[in-house]
Image 1 (cartoon, rainbow over the protein chains, first blue to last red):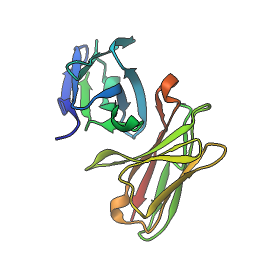
Image 2 (image 1 turned 90 degrees about the vertical axis):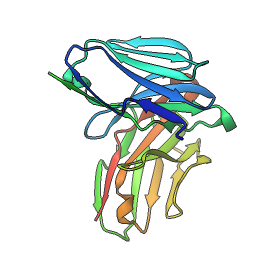
Image 3 (image 1 turned 120 degrees about the horizontal axis):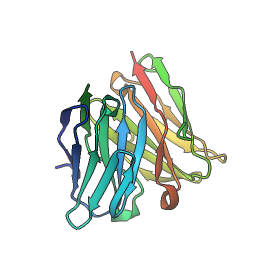
Image 4 (image 1 turned 60 degrees about the vertical axis):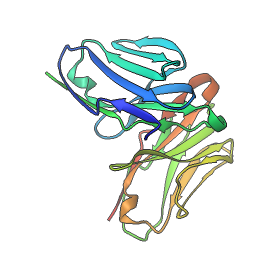
Length: 111
Length: 112
């Protein structure tokens, strides 16, 4: 079983819809990252969370440390939001600084 | 521009060859991480350097090596290349306690 599980694997939405991507993890963590990867490859860090909630524009990320769960929400989705969204955690075990990644959620937003 | 610079962006080479990928971290970041992203494996951690010294090692093959230089730029050397080494190679840097991770745009390596 992967330490980081994302759902759904694939998501297709119509422009304007509210989108939620979920991430569950099984280890103790010091932080969780949400990353965005567009076709063509580059990775952009959207959020780093250790507690609570963060908002940036139409993107909202929440984390529940007790439940080991995080969600990424996109309000008023747009075709330019089409990308792979990757959840990554920083485990506390061993004082590691290396990220452990989920397999990603491929989002397609149709006009 | 994320502040992390990777060169080259694309590389096509033959099996058995050796290549060097380069990464310049964001100004002020002491840690550099190398990750490999292949179609079937997703993102995998290879190796981390902190201020010139190896800090952590992941599933890095013996054919691969890396170093971080005094100016903090890092190089990933891949030798005796095989078809299965074709992947996107990402570098990331961090000054973790303050600013989290920043990824470079990646080097797409194709081994033919």
